[in-house]
Image (cartoon, rainbow, N blue to C red; front, side, top):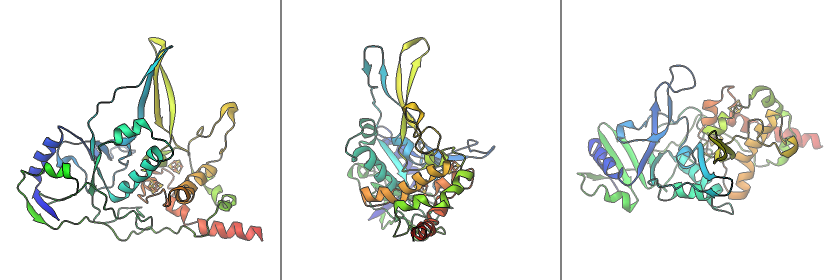
Length: 339
Ligand code: SF4
Ligand code: SF4
């Protein structure tokens, strides 16, 4: 059971919530797109419901709210180190269904993979997720085949239409904010897509033998190793470390972790300069197999949630679902080579 309220009343609720929560949602940043005079949709703090972009897919995911692009994890001197004090309010994060499934994957890596990452845990604690529905599939989405098009583990669902907000709230703390708000009770069910134009076929017989296929060579030619596909991905979680020494005293500084990309040079470089995957096709192979093969072996579901952002952003028009759909032929190729 849900209810309907006026959006101006929702703004009063936002104001009350802002005392205890940071509300984070996709917004349009004008003129910040990758080509001149284009916009970008990315996550930032919002104060009013009108600030939220409901009608476009965000170019970047919710991920930066929980895993900042750059995060100071400690300050150091010659003799000691100290962790930064984090006093941020818990967040209310607006997400679509695919991204809510993405949160589960990031939680796997940072909370359930044999250790708990304290920096992620701090930002993750107390987070409430508000689901944004999808009335139609966006370009390049293939959430249906990845089984991420529907979610019911949201704290609240919100749809805004014609001056009204339609809500289904499951979380008791969030419910309380609406106690005084005039409302009309009604059935509110999230909008989920049930079909995408893009379909993917992940072969049943996929094995690591596919690594020997010639299909990967194409990506050595086309991929320019910019790493954009990783940065927009809601399920890529890799980071690297940087020690920053202050210019006024080079013995003190801070250690930051920053997003990293398995597609860019240097990702696998070891001491002595040895690098495991030099060709860009090999990097693509690693990424694809992680997204639709080995992650599932560990967790029981694929890492990729089919949001299609990697395809939206690639300057070389390289398609991840297009690559996934070549895997069956590649398996046939390597199996026939064995005969
Ligand atoms: S690999 Fe591409 S489609 Fe899959 S979750 Fe990442 S950005 Fe989305
Ligand atoms: S966005 Fe495209 S070109 Fe850039 S690293 Fe990814 S696949 Fe390669």
